Image (spheres, rainbow, N blue to C red):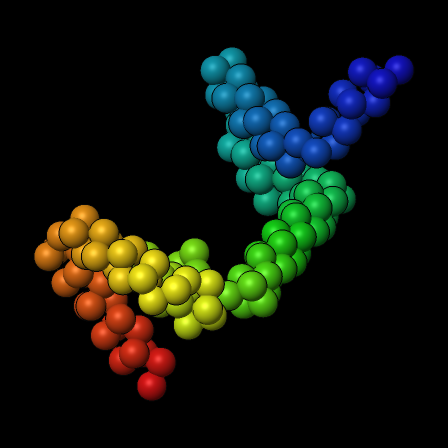
Length: 143
């Protein structure tokens, strides 16, 4: 019974696409067999039948898509709210993280200096220049 239920759900969910394919298939068969005024199948099918099916069954898909978009928006806003609450250390570079830890008192002077030296030894000039440009860009757009 569940397979029939899922088949029915799938048919209802794809009703517009199936109707479109049916109109196209019948119209092409009529053309192939030489039915006079075969073009009426296309005209009535795409101008009347497909829109009616879309009105009857297309709303479910549209409402489901809107629910999906709303859920995704809620999740994104929750994540951004969590990032604001917990700070944005993950977005900052290692130097900014090190500075924040030192400012909060998590590191002693000696630990800070040792970590800073290690960080500066591993950082290339290109990385430092990129980070400087990013900070300037952010400052310009914050103003």
